[in-house]
Length: 277
Image (cartoon, rainbow, N blue to C red; front, side, top):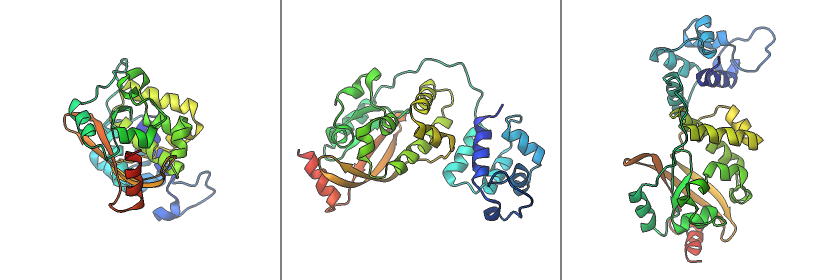
């Protein structure tokens, strides 16, 4: 049975052309990517062994083999780390009911202490566990401010991105934001294969959003720690904000998401305007 490791290897193999890998192509190719035997040769392993690995018939590949495959596939650092995570994944245990996360009290106090910085506290599954007034106003002013405190009614950033019209309209480049969100979710999910809440989130979005399903099937991965969000806020217009995700030592699955703008920039002025509205 094909595993997540096998599906990832197949997806990345399909994304590399023989020309880019320096492989001479013979005969009619049914797919544009590398053949199994071509990738195996580039990685220095037998075609039979690689086939068993991709088909989930071989476990416990050595670090040297995984590293050779990462080089042959020309994986970025995030993708390489993801490959090692998949290769070392434990067998799935018995599923347990999802446990609602509890917002770290110190992180909540930190949110409240910086009223001029839009900030959120997000959990493992991208549920919003808390936000300050400006974070709420920036990203989800159409939702009840107190909703993060209700586990059954918490906003989820990925659900909002794919299923909420307001959130979709907020992003000037929605497609890029959606691709990044799914790649980040896949990176996180690989490290928590037994979490039923993550599995339920992926399953629900795959059914309800064809766009999510297509992005998830592409097996792109990305460790999303910082970057720039390009927004168009309904009250203050265009905003280009730098975001940072900070992991909390006291609550390892929770992350503080902050948004800032360079001083004296139009985006900083727009944030100031939004703060005082």
